[in-house]
Length: 236
Image (cartoon, rainbow, N blue to C red; front, side, top):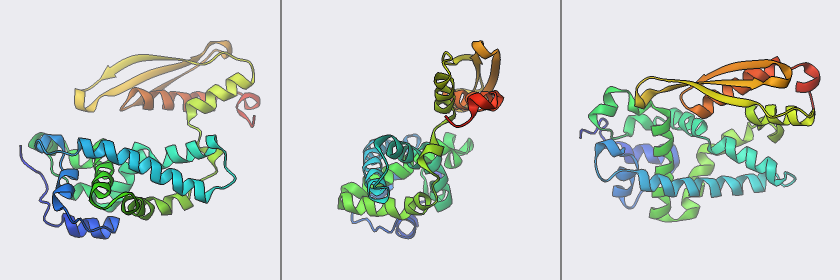
């Protein structure tokens, strides 16, 4: 397999982006290596980094929102550690320029793929943890996610469309919406899902599309929310 990005500048980039210097450069190299590029890839580090990230963000939120309950804190954390957020952060930091990918992933633009970017960022946090411990990793988390946390909306505004739709219907005594997968198109590495969302009691339906079934369901729920009468959709 052929690495798509040389990692000579990776150490300097990690210092600039994450504020950390590895004492074991091999950990940094592994964190930036996708499984398509070799056996020493970043999946185990990503598994570890995911836990480190969740713990560090939970502590940040616990300290920053002393009056928030468990549900609000959970929604805030979910927003900060979501794959979409991590991919955006990784993209802003230029992580893709330092990834090592196999030739196949290079041809399909893997260094821009959200899931690969998010996983690599988590892997880097796992590598920092192994190299210098939890506080060093948590410091990097605060560095990259602290600014986003300060710009977050109220926790109540972070409920995903499916949750909002479910709560709106339940509060008015309606049955839950029914989601039906109607189509899966595209190659395995770039599939598109189509989902119908129906609320029979209101004779309403919508269609959502996305790169995963979950995203398609969320889009369909958001579209159906917009169709709800104001007295059902409004403040509960």
